Image (cartoon, rainbow, N blue to C red; front, side):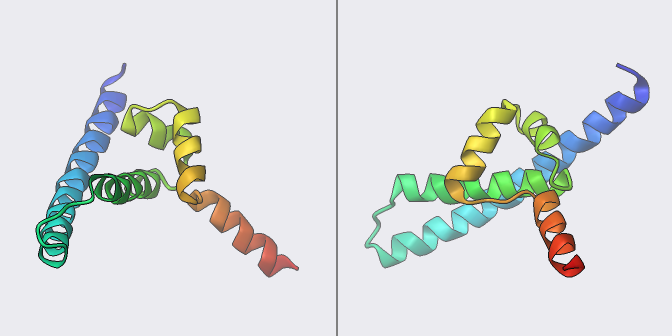
Length: 106
């Protein structure tokens, strides 16, 4: 790995760490709000799902919608990322941009 590749990889990891820290703060705030509304009950699966959606979206945004790069950033297989995106109804940024270009050309 060259120095520039290592630097770029380090920058990606720092960005991901910052995104994770932000997501954790957001999730904590949401959990606190949910506890107040649910009498202290937390729906574990709902909270994990919200966090996973935010994490996937953040990685895709940081990689400009490139699913292969986002998968590497998250240490997932590309197929796993694709399945999760499909499950949650997430669209890659690139596919959205292509859809917008195609619709504006018609």
